[in-house]
Every structure is written in C-alpha cells, then in structure tokens.
Length: 106
Image 1 (tube, rainbow, N blue to C red):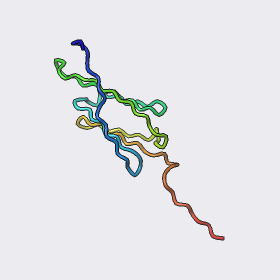
Image 2: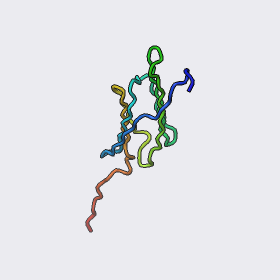
Image 3: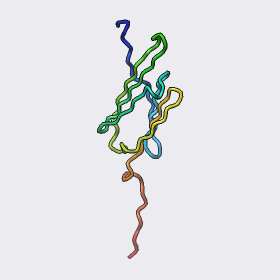
Image 4: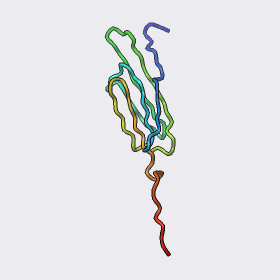
C-alpha cells in the first residue's frame, strides 16, 4: 500500500428488529456528521464516511451498502449521529402494519 492511500473499510453494523421496523446502528469512530453521506437509490442504502486527523494519522474511509427489504418504507428513514455512532430507524410500510378487522353482524 502506498503512503498516500487511505484505507477503506466496512464499518461495524448492528441491526435490531423493532416493533415498527428495523434499527441499524453503525459505528464510525472519529467521523463527524459533516463527513457522512447516506443515500438511497431504489432499495440500496449507501453510506460513506471519512475520518481525517491533523497530520494524516489514522485516516480512514468507510463504505457500506445495504439492500433494504421490500417490507421497509424507503420514505420513512430517520438518521441520528452522536459520538461516532450513526443510528438509522427504518419503518415498516404502513399497509403491512397489523390492523383489527371489524366483524359485521347479520
């Protein structure tokens, strides 16, 4: 590897099924919010992040691609970033949510 090459790695990812959908927790140590990009095209969620320090020590690029299941609503994604951790809340599509069926009397 040449001296000018910045290593790229896949960030650590934890997923958890929630009552309303799915929560993704992505560890991005040293990556500030303004160095993160999250894009969605079709059902492919793409994340890129850059960690840079004065003098170039421990520089790193992060890259992650996740295919979203068709049960998840691509229009209902919330993202939060705090202390190098990005949390994405993905909601189930409303039409797939459980619902009560009324019973009609004769």
